[in-house]
Image 1 (cartoon, helix red, strand yellow):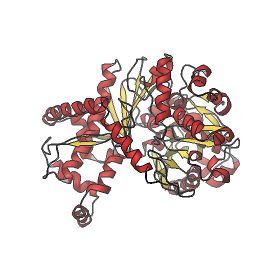
Image 2 (image 1 turned 45 degrees about the horizontal axis):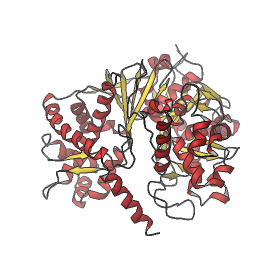
Image 3 (image 1 turned 90 degrees about the horizontal axis):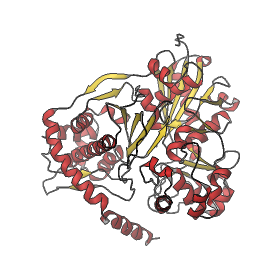
Image 4 (image 1 turned 135 degrees about the horizontal axis):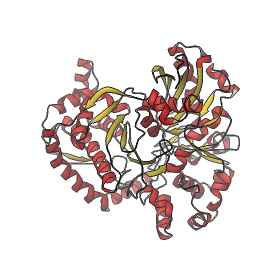
Length: 556
């Protein structure tokens, strides 16, 4: 047990749009200061703005990896300044990133998009987690794995998402073969960043298991990969051949160059990188079997430790030690939550609502939520599907799309907004029920992420799931969780559970279900499930997506 109140660690949380840094006291996990820095280049999902401005294919989502380093160089000194502590009291750094955000580099770690030869090649850029350009490759990977009865496929619910690393790598291999040949390293960005900070390239066990198909000490076989695409069988030996280290381990020490940038001591511990959702389980202390954590933000992840390995269809992955050593950890998720609310605000709300928000000095979300909150459950007459960026669990199909049923000429923005909020809670209930139906119990639910500040939304989740929700004590649970791993890597605690016992925690805020609302939501959920089965198993949304793709391509 640490008793020195003057010892600190820094947690870094690399999100979709920005990086957050938190300075955390080792003795009790108190977050003493934080800072945020946005990436310079907006997500490239329509045009290659960092290159020649060419139009991108549908379903692309690219970023400039160098932006992460520029933002990192700003955010750490700012967080230290805000903390007002001597630099020599910082003993370690840990980081997390959006999972399966993939960067390709040369042998020295420079991103291939920085090579003048490839500055206008979309495949050279960082493929963000929500890049769905590799769906064709994903279909082939899954079909062949089923044909060959590959055992690793069951660890991913019997199906894969195009968000994972292997489909993105195969997309690179097939669409940009010269670039693939000249690429030395294909990396999850968490491993690239710890390489940059420490000078040591290793792979963290978490992202390796969930995103790179590393199970039971091995990758998919060379025979399988050769049959998948001749020439692709060498990918792991040639471009992903470095050691895999457990979560909480020390990758190396902070390099002299980065120490000078940050104003920190050279050589302080750099922890193995982690997935943004998984570190938040540790932040709230949900490391025991049966403790489910929902991380609600632009998208949502649901992470559940368990004592047993079960075959759960439609999960995003299950990894031994995926949260910390000693338990299997299941991952499921929803590809659009906050993103779908933002889409609605940006495209579907009349100006008068914004005028009212300005008049009251509150956000547009508060205006719509306040109006929606006055309604009885079901009063709007609507039910929506939360697939605005595809379905991550349990159908695992990026080609599915959003839907609102029941609209009439009297439907109002607040009606539609509430239906969207409710749809994400219904999607969460599907995931919870799927776990329990397949032998993985859910005993407690913890909630972290940016959406915990929306009390109306949190109450909807409690009512829909009919479960008590315990809320993170900080809105920076990602950075806070990464800091806990940094304390372990620095040797201040023996393991992650011991560190969590001292440094983790939840707020006093608890949401309990309202019996009347839950009863009415059961009826609305039945309609959601009917739509879920109807459109999730049919071809209509696939055909609409195909027509959209053809229409976009016809204008090029």
